[in-house]
Length: 234
Image (cartoon, rainbow, N blue to C red):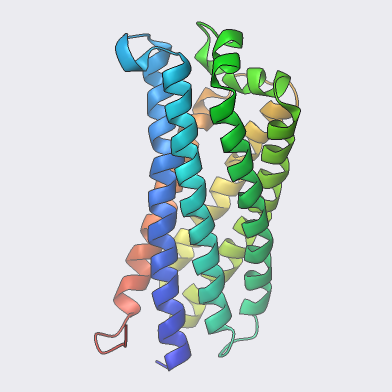
């Protein structure tokens, strides 16, 4: 394995780790909190300003981790481009996605700042939080929509780059991780449409997103860690 390949794989490992942490922070935990709030057990899990602010902070932290993940994936594909020019396209798409996640972070900041308004709108109906956001701050909503759209393009770069890496290193787990990222990209379109207009019940899709956001980078970690030689420099 060449030095460029070792550097690329190390960055893919770190990117997958950051993506896994970001998925837990911004998707798994908020989904769990909203599910509990739906049954109103009381205390912290009552749908109110405290819970909405906490979710906003988690989304913000997750957005930072996703931003780091995209940056590291892009750096990994850029390193692998030295041995295979096809990684150039994946690197460029990830760069576009990086811009998108900056906008998502802006939307998360708006969410934290408008927690009281969201709670007033969605009182007793936690699942209507997205609709309340849509009728609230236009800046935050459109920053989030555009950011998700650009981030989605960055996700295509991840899928393409990981698929190429799977072929390059002859490792099926990387290809499986790319496939799960692809499914995640398809599923995440539904919440974006929910922000634009009223749609049917999307509960099952909302549950699928956190699961895929954890499984996809988890498979990438399984596929990349064995490829790092023990003698590779730090």
